Every structure is written in structure tokens, then in C-alpha cells.
Amino acid sequence: MKPTPGRRLHLITWGVVAALLAGLAVAVAVLLWHTRADALDVAEARVTRFAAGAEAGMNRTLLSFDVLLAHTEELLALRARDRAGLDVAAADTLLRGVARQNLLLRYVALLDARGAVLASSASTGELDGVELPEGFLAAALAPAVATLSVSQPVVSPTSSERVLYMARQLRMGDGTPLLVVAQVPTEALVAVLMQGLEVPDMEVTLERTQGVLLLGVEAPQGTVERQERAAPALQEGSADDGVHAWQASARLSGKPAMVVARPLIYPDLWATVSLPRDAALAGWRQEALTVLFGALLFAATVVAAGSVVAQYLRRMHSARRVVARSKATLDQALEAMVSGFVLLDAQRCVVQWNLRFEEMFPWLVSTIGEGVPFRRVLETTVHYHLPGASAEEKRAWVEERLQQQCTPRGGVEQLLPNGHYVQITERATADGGVVIIYHDVTDLRLATAEVEHLAFYDQLTGLPNRRLLLDQLGDASASAVRTGTHGAVLFIDLDHFKTLNDTLGHEIGDYLLQQVARRLESGVRVGDIVARLGGDEFVLLLAGLATEAERAPEQ
Image (spheres, helix red, strand yellow):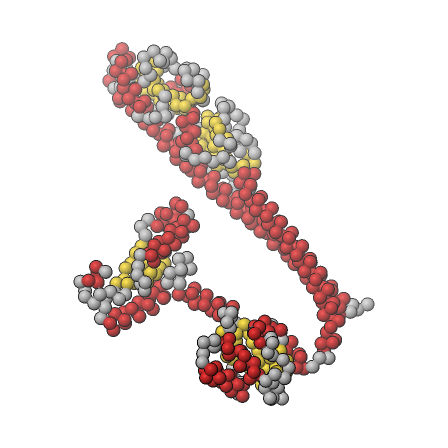
């Protein structure tokens, strides 16, 4: 059975509603997917930058330890003497000077191959011996080439704090191997590893290649007290590019995370940064809930609107047959329903008008009526259109408008007292009457003004742009020639603006440009021009200066 037109419109309406809801669901899913990917990308870049900083900081710190310890061999002149020739008191004094060169060091001690203290920077009696981790002495003396060795973290027997030992091989003139050892608190290295920042959602570690933990900071920021933990061996960089990069396990908590590992300049040492995926997506989840709530609210609105439209279409279908039998004049008026209209007969008397006309001209509600001469309508209108004009001027305006109706050939624009612009279009009818259309063009005028503003003014600062500046510069030049006055053009750019943009971001750079624009405007005279050429370049056009060439620069 073929559906009736009303039933067909009902089905079409709900089909459109269903299509809108499906499109909304797809759009929300795509939006959430892209915003999630963006959040992960931003977090990944953040982890990468932080890892690079941790790597650089630890490399600088370890290199400073290495250089300081290596320098003790030359400082104590060990190559020029044997063990019997070592002046312990002088060596203690020199080592105290070495220890004072780096605030991270607790003390520096010189040990023989059995671990006995030969000299140290500690005060007399303060350091009886150095309790190195088991096997560290032999491991530090084992390499054929002298290098910096880092111990496992241990608890210092003197200060009860967790410390690391930095050691380097030295040799005396008779070939006797020695070991210079520096004690460094792990808390001091935490500041280096974290770069002085508080990043509560990141896990940062200093590890060996096989996953042995030397130092770790876990969110909320606190030093991990375990000496070792079972973790996979490290490889340079991070996991594969893309989403799978977030399938790695955080080095401390073991949660799914983005892990970036950076090898240090000393073998077997790595700095790692882990950002759990849950922490990276915390902000996105809040945004997702907001988007979903908004989508559900919009979907409910669409369903409600569909119901209203369906009812409206049913009523409209019922009324269509009545409208089809209406007069041709009524059809013409209904076509212009979005605008105000007035229909005049051949004698220029009012036949019909619409509600929109009354909304535009509320002062005519009590005047207009069927059969009222349009001259009377104009005589009432002129008092609002020309409130300050004389009686003769108002009469001339009415006659001019009536004359225009005799040969209608275009539009007339009228400014209403409420600030709206109305375009009046008059068309002759077949029976000698006139149809007058009143169309509100305020939005068009505003849009035109906005386009003009965009063409001649800088969008960021609101200052005149290069195009407007050149026009005004030509006018100022012509005026200077005509009046014999001088003018000046000042070019200003901002030093280090690119550095500001790169370090603090474009939002701060834009804010700086706006503030500079405001300060330049406040520092010139009324009539002077401040323009922005682009980037960080501004131009001041100072016109109307003194006619004497000597006074103009002073002004």
C-alpha cells in the first residue's frame, strides 16, 4: 500500500533524525579518537623532552665527578712517588679542596687495592674506613683503562642516608693501583635526574643495562628505596612508533606506559623516564566525559526537534490544501514572509501588510490599516526618520519617496532609530499597485564592515596592517607637502622574540605583541598611527610635526 503524503513526510522526518544521530555518533567517536591520539602524542613528546634533559643532566654530573676524581692523580702527584712517599696530611688537605669543588660530594677518599684508606677529605677521626658495596672495589679496579665506576646504592654507616660511590682507578709511580672514591647521596642525584622540576605523574630512574636500579623516583615523587628490581634489559630509545609505544611497562610501577630510555656516556648506565598511560589520558578522560554529555544532550534535542517537526509537518500537510486555494496576492506576500512587506493598490492605499513590517516599524501599528493612504504612513515615519529636520525638509522627503514609487527601479536604504539598516525594494504589480519589501540588512552591513576590518587591520593586535599603513603613508606624504610640515616613520622590532616564542610558546608571544601594541598606542599623539607589518615588526607614523627641520626630531 502506497503511503500517504503525510505518512511519507513523517517517515522522512524520522529518517533525517536517525541520520543525524548516526552522524553525531560517528563524529563523537572520531573526535574522541583523535583527541586521545593527540593527548598521547603530547605526552610522548613531553616524556621525550624530559628524558633528554635527564640524560644531559646526569651526563654533566657524572662527567664532573669523573674529571674531579681523575684530577686527583695529578693533584697528589701520584705518578712521581711511591706509597712510602705519600704525605698523608698534605693529601688530606688536597682532597678536602677537591671535595669542596662539588657540592654533591660528601667526601673523597684515596684507597689502596685492599680498601684501606690512605687519605680522605673527611675530618681527622671522622672516617675510619669506607664500607664499599660487596665486590665494588674489585670491579672498579678491574678495567684495563681507567674509567668512572658507579656502585649500587647502600646506606652510609655514618649518616644513615642512601649513597652511591663514584670511583676511578689511579696509579702511583711504582705501578701500585689505587682507587679514588667519592660518596654521593642519592637525594642529591634526584635533583639532577628530575632537573629541579616536580612531575608527579612520571617515573624516572638511573639503571644499569640489565635493569638493576641505582636510583628511582616514583609518583608521587619519592625516592624508591629498593636496591634492585626485576626489569627487562634496556635498549636505546623507546618502543615502536605509534600507539604500540604505550604498551611498554613502567620501570617502577609496571603499569602500561610510554618508556624512553637514554644511554649515558658511561657504559652500562641508563636514564629512563616512564609515563603511565592512565596519567597521560587523565585530562582526556575529563574532556571525553564533557563531549559525551554534550553529545547526549544534543541527541535529546534532535529527537525532541524531530518530534516537533513531525507534528508540524502533519499540520502543514493538512493546511496545504487550504493554502493552495488562497489568492495569488496572499501567495506573493507569503513568499516574502522573512521580510516586512506592504501591498499598495493603484491609488497608493494600503491593501495588506505583514507582522514583520510592524516589528520593524512599531510606531506605525496604530497608523497602518487597510485603505490607509501610504502618504499618511510616510508622514508618520518621517518624524522618526528625520527627528531633527524642519517641516519643509520632512515634506520634501515624503514627496521624494512618493515620486520614487511612480517609477520603481531599485532599492532605498533606510536607517531605523534602533540602529538597524533596512533595504526597501519596491516592485510594480500587474494592476498598477506596488509591493514594498523591507529587508533587514544589518547583519550584511556588519559583515561588510568586518571584512573591511580584516582587510586593513591586524587580527592579533587590532592595529592597521601593511596595506592600510601604505595608504595612510601616502595621505600623510601628500599632507606634508601641502602644509609644509614634517613627518616621521619609526620602525620597531622586538629583540629575541623568536627565542621567547620557542621557549614559552606562541600564546605568550601573541600576548607580548598585544601588550606592545597597547603601549605603543598609549605613547603617541591622537592622530599618529601605530601599525604592525607582521611578526614582531611595528611602524609608527608621526605626521604633522613642526615645519622647521630642527624642531621636528625633538617632537
